[in-house]
Image 1 (cartoon, rainbow, N blue to C red):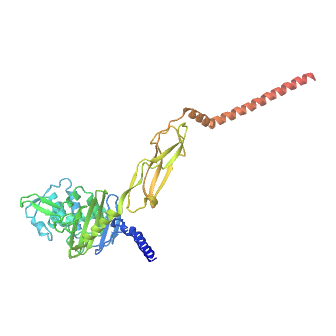
Image 2: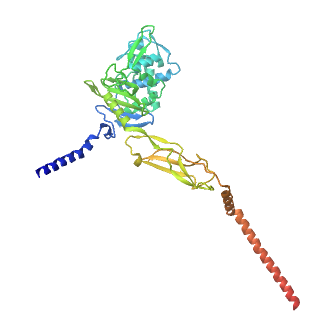
Image 3: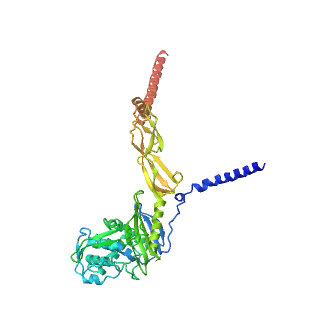
Length: 444
């Protein structure tokens, strides 16, 4: 009896263990719910958008004016790229006036050194070199002040209305401000310039020797691109942009990253971030945002070209009395990775007619279909027939006869014949009546 009770207790415990195990054994980190937004901390503002779909995914204080730090060099590069677009190998001679304006991070160019616009763009965008920015400004506009006017004009032209520049380097000035949203607009524009991303994705740039210097090895200061200055923030999917800091403006970054497997590119902006004890929150927040974006969004097929949408009746055929309709093409859309396609995707379609008359050719366009995700239109395409259906000539003749009998001409003709027939009958009846009268009158 005691043994039986003990066995029951053991069995009960085992049952409880087996009941709990499936809940704990199969839960992995990959299956954890994706949060609605990425986490950012210890920064003034942040912004995240997808390049291919021009979609903003996350904003944190997006319109708060802050100091831009080295993100200024994005606009410096835009103006210089467009000015030297036809000849990036244009030569610029370094002058004493240029060098006298330089402070902060620099390559160390010499008075009288002859450099090219391409070299200065690389030095500025790869190493965030302030002397390269000043040299470009003089090479483009003849003076820094004239170049700054060009920068502000360009910012207004592309829609960065809350941004004001006072120098081309990003060194602090109380009057020089921007917003995370403006910086994203500027970054998007810079991304579209041929050669810009190629330069900013370079981990090491070797500048050829000049008339005053041997070759120079220049390393990228963006730690998401290069491990030269700090190995902790290297990001394999990073493809460029820039990073920097000032005492007043804090740490800033504009980071572009692309995942080839997903065919998606994101640009993350972090401004006014804190940094201490090797913890730099411009990088930490940018990486958090990019990691979240690559997990949270993906391309999903929301409509397949092989999906049968409906059937249409077919007339005048002796072989088939209907044809199926399918989308002309598949539609793939950029959606949240956790979207429930079976619940959240809706279809709306219409056909141009209620039925078709044979002959029908496969691929005939007979309607349209629209795909929606939570009332957002994702795309539309034509509905086409899947089969070719021949016409029966006998049925066609019968149909023509049937249609002819319904025509106004036929009906008018029948009515006219009927009227004439009635008139003729009445006429003949009257003639007979008259004849009978004449015959009857003669007998009297």
